[in-house]
Image 1 (cartoon, one colour):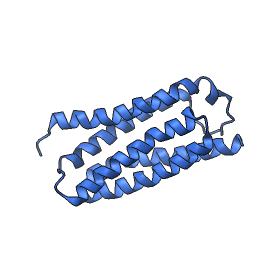
Image 2 (cartoon, rainbow, N blue to C red):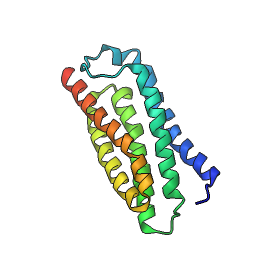
Image 3 (cartoon, rainbow, N blue to C red):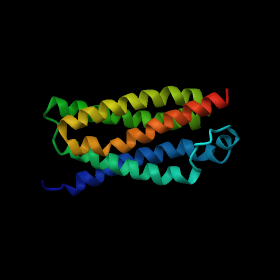
Image 4 (tube, helix red, strand yellow):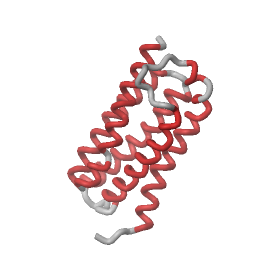
Length: 158
């Protein structure tokens, strides 16, 4: 398979851009509001989030590229790309809901919807490219952990 470097770079940049947009809502609250919250003992250190998300967005970009390479003619491909964009939007919305709105409850609602869309995307991507679907597994695992973390923060701060 010939690699279309332009499509690969665009795919990665789309995903990294989602991370950058999300960080606009996240960054101002991390050193202020987030520090005041009660958090569970399994909360990772703040410095860990940026590198993990950077890697996850890179894997998501490669995954997007693999499906995009298959084209838009097929109904399954269109559905897969639509689901991918939808989950990417909810990824950004979570940052807005949790950090931007400073609401663990709103964040919890959004992250549950996000998780459902990620699962749907993984399942759809697997139909088109096994590798594309598998590249999203670390993402859904991290978001699964984030659901637990978000839920725990909400519970501890009610």
